[in-house]
Image (cartoon, rainbow, N blue to C red; front, side, top):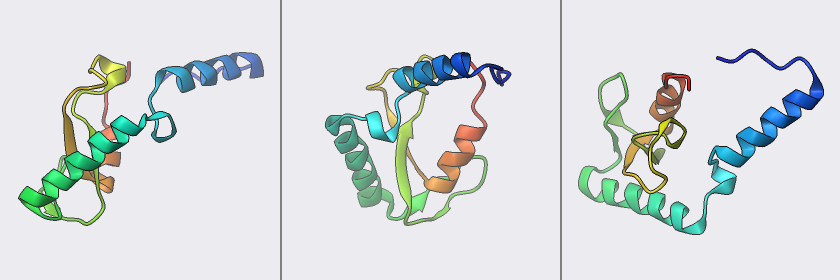
Length: 100
């Protein structure tokens, strides 16, 4: 984890850079939103409301989300493959990602 910038100007520059380079829910295109929704729909058609789990066994869940297997910020492609996990496992995965 990087140390917090001390001055407001550098913090603002860092935040602007983060906003411009890290895809978020607000910056996703309609095509990417559709691709993620399709991934979840296809997963449900094959597996039902089942999360395969991340660092824990698979379990039932109705709150499924699609996420890149290989993070964009760590060299993955924006159009790369997606995986479906429940929101809790997806958050756990986010917390266990290596720092850049």
